[in-house]
Amino acid sequence: LVVVLEMMSDRLRAWQRAFWAARGVPCLELAPALLAAEARGAPVRLEGDPHLAPAGQVVLATELERVLRGLPGFGRIR
Image (cartoon, rainbow, N blue to C red; front, side, top):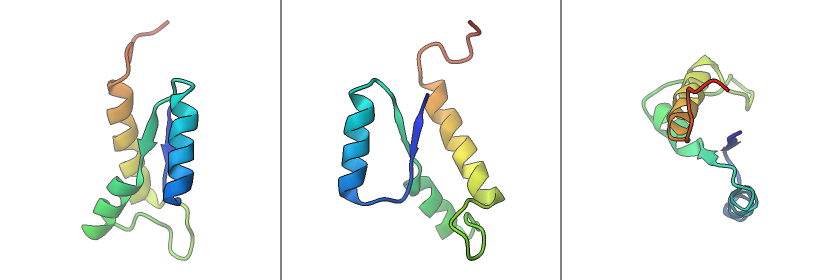
């Protein structure tokens, strides 16, 4: 389990990080990667819609894989 945090207030982000950390659940801060992709010209959001466009989904998948690979036991089948 990994919780993905995106655009939110600093107060809510801090609460979310503390809540999940207390339960041993890692968080993925997606906003920096989305903003960087957007700055490179990638359309990360659907036009007129807050949902991720295909380019944003690629960013999410890439970042999620990076976080998952850092977890103990990644790739091991139980």
